[in-house]
Length: 308
Image 1 (cartoon, rainbow, N blue to C red):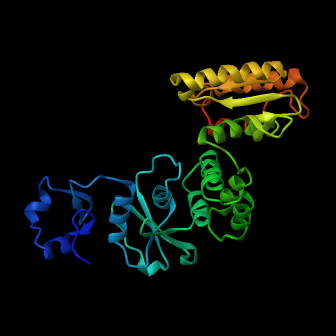
Image 2: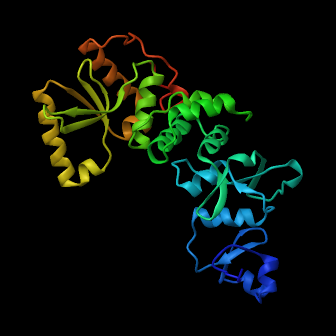
């Protein structure tokens, strides 16, 4: 292949193609890793950095764990290092900023031109890097965007020999199909980990002719309670705000109770969110609602100091 400085390259390859050591030290090139460079004019992307990491490894290596997630565009928190895997311990190459694992090449696929862990394999690998809630976010994303069913994830985690397979299985059991956003996943997990009944995801309300007239993010249809996450879009976009007002008027006519949750109700004051939903469900006579909420949500959300 012709030398392309817009793609990550090894220092030795650059020198062979006329790039001088002085040029590599200058503003025309960026260093991704030790002995891995790319032209400064190229746009930095997660995929570019993954390509740089793989340039340091044997041809059999592939992007795994968080690096595979970044190549696919999965919603994960910031993780500093790149992660690659090789099929045998003797093939591992260690570099600063780069973690090299030993994995099973049977689940490797090509994505965006690089070798990466398959979706299910990636989910299991991430169980050693992510918290329970963050891993369920990835699982819901896989079900929504990649066609992976929750049942497939559970079966794969049970068969896996990965050291963190139990964490992966625990998260897989919470994964649901049809979840629209990571924040909806977080809201659902907050409610469930606190011991509240699990709400239905994206319930469609239909007119007599079968037309879908409304859809609720999370709801308890038995007592006509809907719990929804509203981001900035619902406030900043006038059309969305007006549609929300009309929707709430229709809900009032049908005696539905809507509990709206914003980002602060998850990241800053989840206790308030839980108390609001708990109070409404008790008032509406929802079955199996505990009188006292569990504390299982606390390790995964802010609010340790507040009493239950």
